[in-house]
Image (tube, rainbow, N blue to C red):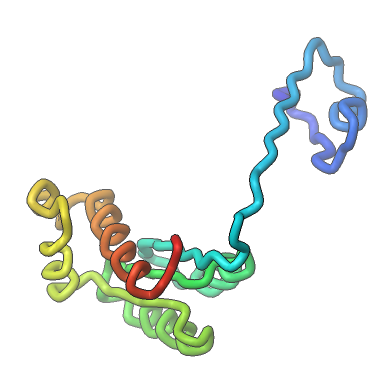
Length: 150
């Protein structure tokens, strides 16, 4: 609805949804999402962080509340020591369910062993999206080793 008026997102009928708006047509799309065949599927998330200090803890709590089993956090700036240390401390508090990786020479060496490195290596230092892709590939390897279904 592009009326600029607030709508009731908990409405059960179109009339409740649109209230006193003049409606010329309504399209409703209903999607049913299948339940997982195996409710014990272990799922992880990978995230590249920069300047995350004020939202780090809420990000972590939120994703664990959603049901993620493991968080792979990649800090793009090794100078964000307080955030990195806080993430590591939270990793201990959450029983090792947070894997913290910092962008440094060691990580760059690990990237060089990944499939696709030869096409991406020239851009790894200058392009944040390339680092995101490399971190996701690196996390995928960790997730497999950690028994995640992803």
